Amino acid sequence: MSTTTDLGLRGERIAAAFLSDLGFLVIDRNWRCREGELDLVAREHDALVFCEVKTRRGVGYGHPVEAVTSAKQRRLRTLAHRWLAAHDEHAPELRFDVVGVLVRPSRPALVTHIRAAFL
Image (cartoon, rainbow, N blue to C red):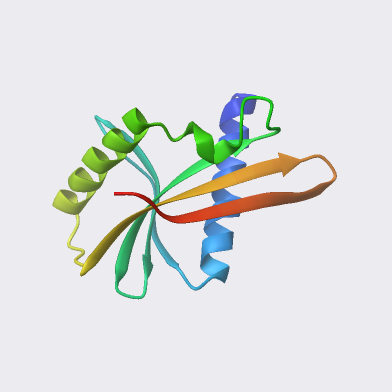
């Protein structure tokens, strides 16, 4: 595994634990289809949440959550439709959240959670 892959997996583990601590139920991780990958799919009360996780070691290229561009948002919407078609999950509310994880040496990671980051 590359260093970038390791960093991403670490960030996803941190994000899943963070969301679980908030009361989310993580129901899928790293779900893939030909269009791409969903990092986390979770339930929060009546909401089905598709969560994109971005992890970085620093902010030299901007905060991690800034990496979710409009093109990435479009792809995540497509992936959510594919996931829904492949699973027997229903919810009155669908939501897209973004979790930014800033990994810092010798200190705890900083986690930023943006609920309903985009439509």
